[in-house]
Amino acid sequence: MMKNKLPTEREIQQLLFEHHKKMGILSVREMRIPRSKERVDFIIYEHHYANDRKGKQSGRNGIWKFYEIKRTLSDFKSKCKLSFQGNLNYYVLTEELYNKLNKDDFKKGVGIIVIYRYKNNNLYLEYKKRPKRQELQVDHGELMWCFMKAQGRELDKYRMKEL
Image 1 (cartoon, rainbow, N blue to C red):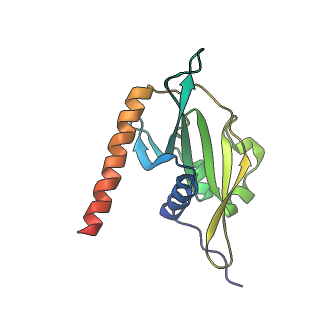
Image 2: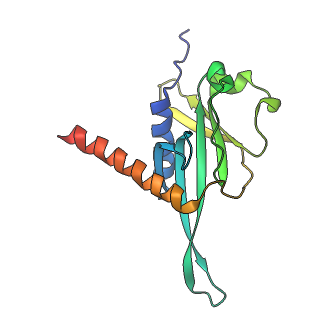
Image 3: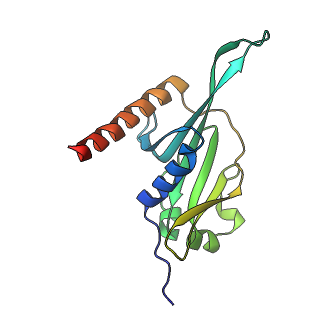
């Protein structure tokens, strides 16, 4: 019996992108956190319009979702800083890694998503635990600027492939 190959980080990022693209949410992979050397593996910004007391749209409120991708036990236990500074934060784990861990290994308030591989080699994700919403730990404006720069970088990469 052949053992399932671990999905690559790129495959996991693509799965997260495809999953959230369907819902009309903006996303980018590997983004630097403002005023920090930290990077988050995958980030989503989901904006909502807020209504004032008269029911008129008065501006935008948004939710920042940060995803830390961990594929192996050594990756999970590494000294690299986890960037759980969003409103909602998630661990994204391979099935093999998830099965090796217990509840005490996870940071409180952080959601858990597990990546599975079908026998036909396609990937799918399953939400195992919902995250607890928290205040954004970085400035919204600076985060949005870094987000736009990261999206520009991704667009440049795409354009270079087309040439």
